[in-house]
Length: 181
Figure 1 (cartoon, one colour):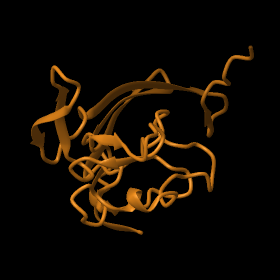
Figure 2 (tube, one colour):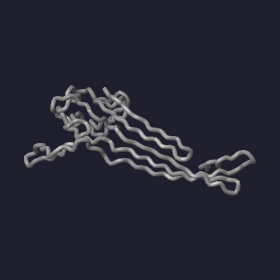
Figure 3 (cartoon, one colour):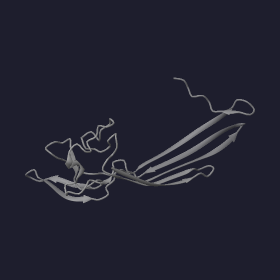
Figure 4 (spheres, helix red, strand yellow):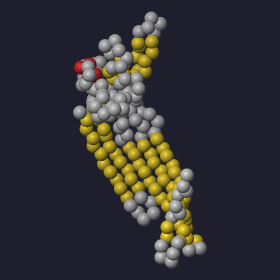
C-alpha cells in the first residue's frame, strides 16, 4: 500500500519558467520495480520481483507496529527554474540559458536481517529513521541512538545552455544540424 499527495506550483513568465513541488510518498509497498534496499543490491530491478510480502515479518517493524513511512524515492521538496536571454546580432540570434534544479534528499533507513538470512530484513526503527548501531566486544548489536527523518544529501544541478540560430532564408530561422558521427 502507498499514498501519494502533492502540491504543484507553476509559473510561466516569458523568460524564466518556474516549477516547485511539495509532495509526500508514504506506505509499505514501493511498487512493481522495488526500490527498497532489502536484498543487498539496492532493490530489485525487474517488475513483479519484490520482497515486500515474502515473509510476514517484513510487513512489521521489530516493535510490532505496521511498516509504514516514507518510501525510498520520496523527495518532499523539489524545485526547478529555467531562464534565458536572447541576443540578436547580424540577422541571427543566440540564446543563453541557465537552469537550476533542487531535490531534497531521499530517506535513509536501517534495515536488519531476519530469519537467519541477509536477503530479507526489517526496518530497525521504521522507514526514514536511521539507527546508529555498533557491535560490542562480544558481538551483540548495540543501538547508540536514532536519527529521525534521516535523508541523503540534497541533489543540486546547474546547467548552462547556448543555442545559436542561423538564418537560412528571409523568413525562417533554423538551428544548425547536429554533427554526424
